[in-house]
Image 1: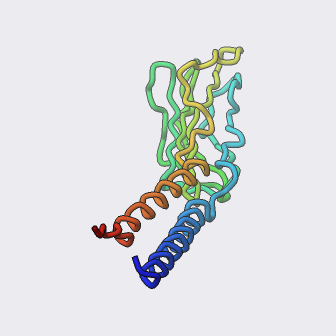
Image 2: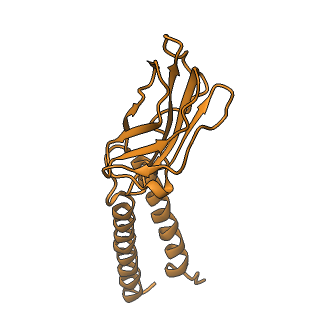
Length: 185
């Protein structure tokens, strides 16, 4: 290999390294840009989780940590038998709350199940239970979805994905730009 060819190969490898690093930085920036540190939260429900009411509510309200997209959010109120008591569509209230009108029902245990989509695209699912006319709080629901369930990419996974992309680009570039030495002999 001549000195000119060796210098050209070194420049190509240096350029490859710089381009790979730049691509990695762009991928990392895109993966983490605008991402909040914590998922949105349902701060409270009305009736509250575990409440024991004398009279059935005509609506349930979810107070939220951030502005909500009511069109993509769902709130369902059901009795112990699973009959849905919703009386219309869920609506935003004050930008950071949801209100779901319900048909008042008799006594028993009721579940509020929600899937909230925030204005920035974050999501959270969960549930709350209350009782009406029983005089005691409802029993815990073992099958309730966990509060705080989100569909975001965690930062560590984003970094590992970006590193995988950088390694793949580097390997492909090496295959394209670095040529094997010719054997003389």
